[in-house]
Image 1 (spheres, rainbow, N blue to C red):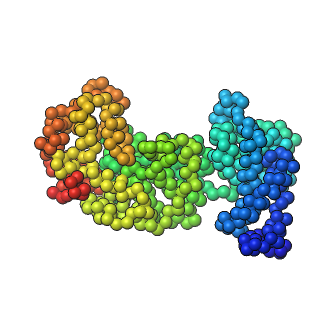
Image 2 (image 1 turned 30 degrees about the vertical axis):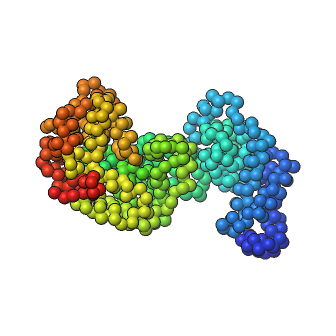
Image 3 (image 1 turned 135 degrees about the vertical axis):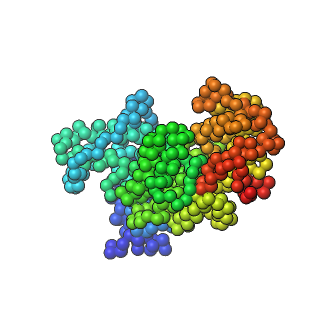
Length: 527
């Protein structure tokens, strides 16, 4: 048995060969017992926990997917039984006695990575871990989970049942306690000591996370998930998105629209360049993770980014996707922006690799969205888009922004006028939220909505009036008599006021709209 590899012994043990399992026990008993000792700081309890770990492993061998990973799997089991023991017999071990100090420590920035070459010599590592073994259990256990088992701060917090901030503060204090214990070796040991406290250990993949805006990006940075966070946040559900433009012309076209809508041409250019640079830097990483949700704005970012990646030579870079349409306890689910750092961290292990089906769907969708003929979108919706499960609903919602057959209003315009007719004048912010409650999922941001309302107020024949008192960019809004007539179908908004609107690659301009949305049949009609 001694000459056999772990995987062979596991397979024999699965068939009931106790000698094979006894050999596995012989190989791992000392290291597993030592790890239990380090975790619970009680050699006699560690013996019992070691026996329990081997018993659990024996009873659950069929759950081990890869027999070559028996050692790491067994180590996770001893971590589990040790933590269970600590929760029962030392439940106060991680309860903070000074919340103020814990908060202050958790908010301290992580120590800067040493510029010196990290020392790999075994004797220096041993000095560090001899010191770790002398730490109080309160600090030794999270440090062990973090470094030996490679868990992130969030995973350590989940294992111990404490907040992430507490784990970070315990790690900070552990470092503070270790330093004086290693003063005699400070010059040679401290570079290696920094290794203990890195969230991402040497040899682990370098990750780039791409998401849609500052809100989610900031929360991701607080989550403890390793890697660099960048933003790709162009809101392409409004403004020109025509096909066939080179990169420079595309940037200038989008920047000009954003500046006309919100001001600041140079700022718009800089922002869009940063978006492009965010994905262009993928070659510096081992994995790129795209974090988006089910809203139209994010689905358009998704198909554009995947279309771009489909034309790149990824080499060995892995491309993964996290696309959320719901979250437990969040009803309604508005988007990733409403999740906390811990909640975002819980999604990290749900990421899925982007494959041929996702690329194929994204390319087809992007071509259809940027086409001057929106019939391509309707054709796409008759095909299988299940590889990107939220795309079809998002694109259908996009089509509903075309002027309607009955009155020339987009769905958003119609909903806004309906709310004003039914509830009377409303401050801009209340109107925005009232309209959003009619959407599933949330459709647009307040800035885009206010711009749309301003267009209705500035039209030749205004459909609404806005007071001079501003509230978050928009004053009190009321519907006009013309607005009522249009809403009721007695007049047509486009016929009255003309149109100059881009919807993807379609430019509607003039006194007639060449494409209209028919709610009755649920599709576009050409005029």
